[in-house]
Length: 200
Ligand SMILES: [Ca+2]
Ligand SMILES: [Ca+2]
Image 1 (cartoon, rainbow, N blue to C red):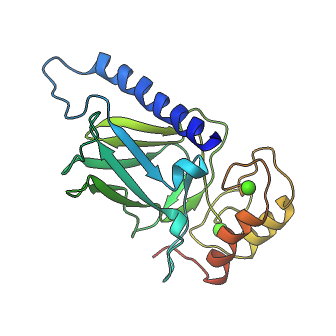
Image 2 (image 1 turned 90 degrees about the vertical axis):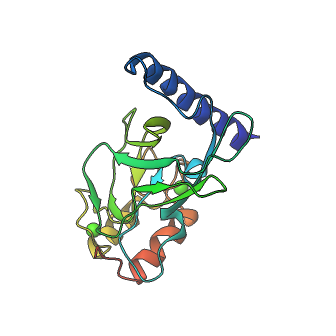
């Protein structure tokens, strides 16, 4: 039930933003989506974007499936899905920040990179055909050593993770936004560190 209310909140943010965009669009601009039914998984569940530098076995949480459907629940193919960040982010060359929905209305984004941005009303935005459908308040990554990101998950990031373990309060390594750096975050940090994730 909590998850549903969270998703409803995200969707309302999307709709509110959509309303703002509609008011600012030039006259005559056509929109292919009126009130889209969308999901962005797993980032909706994590309540933010999870980035990880490149590795041979990419972190599943860094790969998002964006589902776009009309208000009547019909898949929307050929829609351009774009992800942008607001803040100091490291984006690796093999990141996929723009994609097109297939016949099932699904597009895949790959947040390959690092960095952390918190305490912002707009830190990451996903648009469909230019219309914002998600506005996330943060993005987080194992590649963050307390000062920034360098495209590598190394000892400095491990130290920062370890220092934060068991604490909360908006820590950059609380990837699932449950208020504490815990075991669920370790399952995301560990593989990136062990694999020596590094930007290509
Ligand atoms: Ca790093
Ligand atoms: Ca957590």
